[in-house]
Image 1 (cartoon, rainbow, N blue to C red):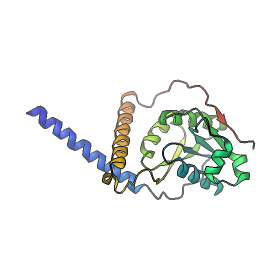
Image 2: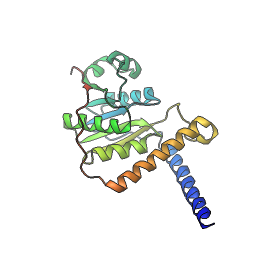
Image 3: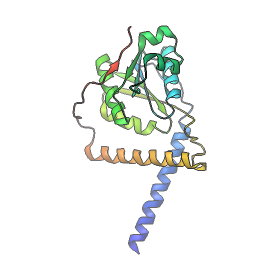
Image 4: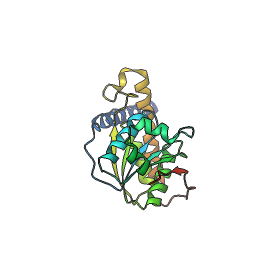
Length: 209
């Protein structure tokens, strides 16, 4: 009996955390204009177009010197990404770099850390989907604890963060993201933010400028 009560209590706590997480995601957009930083990074994934467009808009507004698009599909070309981004050709050719090695959020963090180190950047604006931002920031802060990071979440058609429980797709995505977020919190609690194993330098395709 005590075991059942314990399981029920854990379930209630987990569910309360899920709704708090979803509310946090819902309230995160529209994001206020960020302060200027050295660079801006857009993390690809579901709803990538909106993320890349938002990153380019920040770059064009003078909020950063350069932009990294992390986790680009290996089959995509620079022209493909420019078409998606709707970027001004002069700025795109000058100041947008493409990273091709990241296949997940951990890879995004490593790729971004390597890029920032190569550029000698101390501050970044992070652009990703609203539901993905909490976990992305955990991974990025773990990979680059000495870098100042600003979150710039964007809403995407992939999920309706306000009414996420109304469709199976949105509910599954929110629950999955919350569960992954908890897993990262647990991992960081166990190992702390100590030195990480060095990762191989990512294949970042730089612009000509």
